[in-house]
Length: 327
Ligand code: FO1
Image 1 (tube, rainbow, N blue to C red):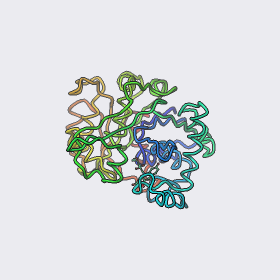
Image 2: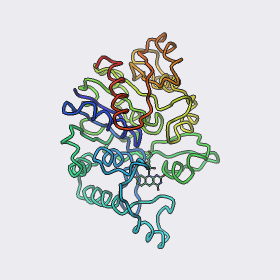
Image 3: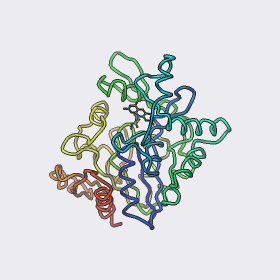
Image 4: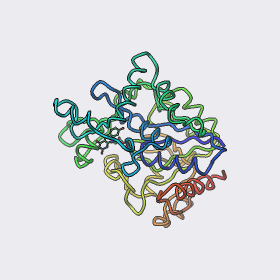
């Protein structure tokens, strides 16, 4: 079965790992990753969501953190701090640096981000698992955050240094207007048997992917059913700061509000005139009161235990999501 997943970092990576466990040998999965968190740091290109997906699916991720490498060290980062360069609140691990150095070398040799990503993934055996990892775009797109007082921060500074504690008035995807879906992205949406929006951050992860010109329309018109899994359980995100991001765009931090923010395919256009992208929404039993309301609005909706405790639990969540759209 051909499954296409639109993913941010930790939540989307953990979901995809469970999906691969569910599909086993039948896996033909394309993951389209958010690249809005990317940045240049110490002269190397850092791609947090691509790397979290690659490490998680490659079995090398630091499990508790959800990002970065297992058995990591930070000798280089500590020595860089001694030179007072870089962001002392943002640690680039020694092993992680090898990834950024390899990627940067290939980019400087003229490879695209897609090509560099494909080369990096060879080492982690992703193709052998039936999974292909694509950046949402080959051109650089960087999410910046307009904070109260007018400063524009790179997303990672707002997210890591300030833990989203600075009230944000807007997210700005720098470079978006000159970005195009990376090779294979639109085809992966159009040719899928099913498209899944995992419990990633609906604003700065999935929202950024949807903002790449052409992607939202491909989702709105693909013959494949599109099912989403709520990142909000009982009025709060499972991890990360999705609630702060949702507040910035005026969406309540509830499972129902996030579904309606993504919009129902073929339903009313969104406030910004954009078409809905989902047919179905899987939410947690803590929010099952919303199932009836969503169904009354034409949604396919169901409640399940959506906490991704471990891989088997996540495989069950993926199965429930696929079942909701008859796959
Ligand atoms: N997150 C942190 O909270 N602190 C860090 O020092 C940090 C370093 C880091 C380095 C490389 C990388 O790929 C990710 C890193 N992250 C760090 C996680 C990052 O903020 C998140 O993965 C995403 O940007 C949000 O999903």
